[in-house]
Image (tube, rainbow, N blue to C red):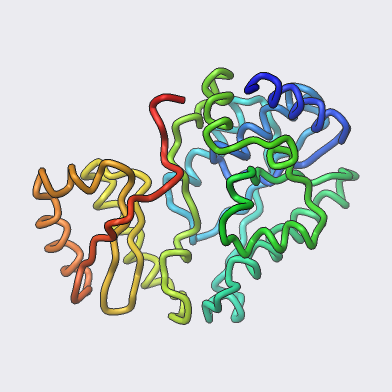
Length: 266
């Protein structure tokens, strides 16, 4: 079944002829980019990356290296969402507004370079979640070959591992603005606090975590198995002290483990 899906993915991408790939450096878009290079050739594929101050620093640092490893050309757009008033006001459809702006820019690049199709790494699991950004993808007519060939997140990881892609076990990542509760203005100071809080958790070994900014308070989300480890190692005491030093009054631990994390069985 897995190999059949991958063959369908290659056939789907081959039909496009020449493409650009909205590239985040994550497991999904890396598989799309690598497959496009394999079936269409490097000269017919362009990776497009939007570098913003809202992305974790380590993510931006991996982009060029990952593109080089799959043999893809890469074009980096530097953008500043802090210049978008409708975005920093942080409405419920913030992700839609951001995705539409970025992907509209990518489409302009495709037009300028004579590239007929823009591809995105959305998989079928994403379609089951509440993701406002999907509306922008649909409105702009962007192709989603993973979803169209029924790839789940775990299947993406399995194929990526078989292909020896460097992202197969990379934790899911997202824009730091998603950590700030809707309605609270997105500011550089708040984003910096979130980044510092999550870096502290990473240093303790908690990858794939989230620090949700709730104004005066913060809620921590950990990956499967990490809640028990956190309590057993008494890291929750260190975390509380550090997070309060960042200005938070109360530190909550979300008992719902984050879904979609890495399975060692892939």
